[in-house]
Length: 245
Ligand code: NDP
Image (tube, rainbow, N blue to C red; front, side, top):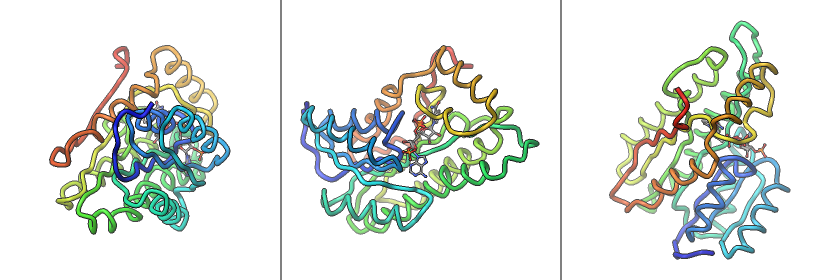
């Protein structure tokens, strides 16, 4: 049940599963109007229905973050529904892991397109209007893979190091837009289901099943950053399972 009233929408990319879905549900339960995007529109509709039944405010639109026109349309639709946009959570991501020597070039490009270009597209679509309204908050979901590199994660890490770098640069440039990096460790989600080397993905899935955080733990970290007063910018939150090295 919604407990507080907040103005302006919280836009969440990749909200059809995992961390994005959990973040939408949690922020809606705190009273934030949420606007969900992802490619699987049927999933979004079902989540929106459940949030509304629980008393929250939610809407959705199909979104492909690799397509700047799709991202602009997503932001435009959120403005029509909610008026102002307070927060964008750039969460959509893919992680088809493999060694560099396997030369899975299509998957490298997909990681660059979704994880890095998708985040840049989100920034491009909201930054002018946040600057014009004199406030806003951009939250970029990176990873502990943006802080360290492991075998089979070279390209994934490269995209997440890049997301952290561009977040820090944006933070320094803007005096009105808050920028937060969220860097989770192993988290239960559907991230290992799409592509990558089968044995590697299975090993990560197994480790995550053993010790992974629930997606709700990452949603709580995002909610902490979102709920600060506008003079407080939480720059980065790193959240790992206690058992993760
Ligand atoms: P999920 O696979 O459960 O969620 C990923 C989301 O991204 C889905 O909603 C998916 O929806 C969406 N997505 C993928 N491609 C696109 C696209 N082109 N356009 C729009 N949406 C897209 O995994 P997580 O919840 O784990 O991932 C969320 C973020 O968290 C990612 O950035 C990931 O890198 C990061 N992360 C995850 C960790 C983990 O251990 N799980 C650890 C550290 C970071 P759809 O397919 O419907 O488009």
